[in-house]
View (spheres, rainbow, N blue to C red):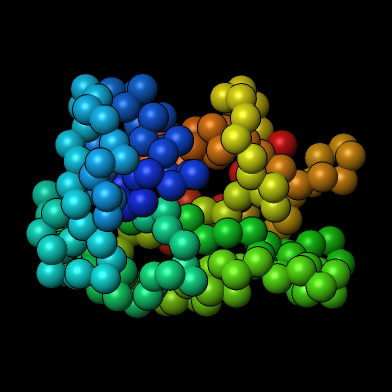
Length: 204
């Protein structure tokens, strides 16, 4: 199996990606600012590192087959993250970027739709800007991944749909996916890449 570096291993999404990777017998370097949040698990090595310290993070990333970046883009500099991955020598990088940049049926972004409703999550615009920076990368095999609009803790069903830039809704007009199923979509892409230098989304 692969040797994967996971930045943001204790987050809402990152923690599920960690569980999914370990469940499929991958070797994982779980990267977090606070290692005390993680207890020992077979196949996992915990490293204390942060995107704010690119020198340390570069060393931690070296030698991995791929890196998954699941962070809040309002708290992290995407260009510094990209540069750190580049300097580490890891060529395969997967970035979680949020749902705001997905295109709804009326042609507007989901971000614009939320703005019209008077809702602006703090991570939404920075995540859109992160996607722009990621799409400009020419020297890495990157993939950007957007969840559905709602991504609560839930069940691991393995039943969901994939799309590219379109905002996906179910038969009730709702856009949602559990964190557990979203993690499946991410690890599936690591194991069988289908979206090299593309963004994709997963939803019910």
